[in-house]
Length: 550
Image (cartoon, rainbow, N blue to C red; front, side, top):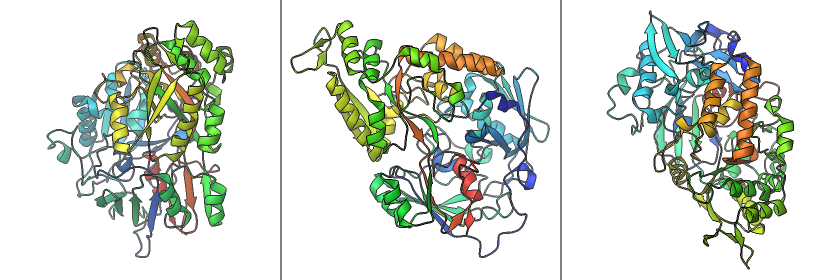
């Protein structure tokens, strides 16, 4: 997925106005059905702020919409959405969107360019809402004429198109301007432009109801969406396997037996998109030592972790951080080979001994002043595959003299500790984007982080290196694919040399779906959106617009 695709003309949409295809007719009375999503998460808080990492996936796409839709799986193919067109200035510092006419919020108010300007300026006023630190490079967002919004950047900033166009839900100024503190606003009854409204929410279930006045005529076809909460995978898998849910987004052990064999209309598709990694808190006094971090890499048998924890559905990751085959053209294989990271417990032990750590009679290492090499790793208790994977990792680390204690937490507690940096190690993944640059930026860009105790939007391990920040900024300044490739190669070297985190497996979009009642799903032959149920945004909002009853 070469970055030059950002400069391509807008992809032509199928049907109305260049957006998602739809027949220009009113919804018939018999259109509908209820789609149920089975996706192990956590109990719902019934907040739908598009600027809160714990709730934005519930809202952006089905309720709040973005200016454009950018498809990660199709070389950043861009489809007009709330905006019908965009253009860059010659120096790639000014990005102008032309807004779509005739779009209304669900309270009947017209969407205007003023709402877009307000939305982005609110992120500037309240940096905690700016989840992708867009304002680290933006200088202004302003309306031009009746239908244009102009974004001005400090530097050439083509990669920021993805964040601006695809990752920010546009909210109504007439409502959010009255919110006293948007950083704590729950947004329990969201008013968006999207195809659905929130009709009911409890800790156990979120109900979505079709917006009858949606701006794309004839859409959505599905009348209702139910998103029940599951705190662990097994009950979610049971609901899916028995046909009570039609769309799943979780790990299913032995999927051919437990899901595929249950019905000929059951299917799955698992494209790899980002890395599941062991995030290493850079403020931990022992983990600050790169020798310890490198020893961790050699001590972990990623292939075994992937096979036992993920049943082989997720491939083992590489320390360079490049997801393959999705982004294989970006991987510097020579550099990775020269780094020499293989499963090698003896080398892990040798590194620790050479760095001055002492191994006791019990085989466990400690510092020169007697502090044990013992760390706690936080983990999502709901993800049974992660629980199993870390049990394997703990055994492997014990074999080289490092104690790993697994703290399996409920989702809300896990997120709080992860974002606030209150952990030694954390098992997690970032959102990624259309090229590896986005995952590296999320991992390593210090403006996205925060002091311990304060919520970081990204860079949860608190890595800080001015040279690395400069590389990330330089990437955004360049529109030359060769230059961008060279920068990503240098960012791979940061992971190889500094080991701020350890990619363990390649996170796939867990996608299980039934064609018994609904059709129109994304497939390897038609990858029109990332298929992860109810989580990847705005993609899942795009998917439900493609679906209809069989």
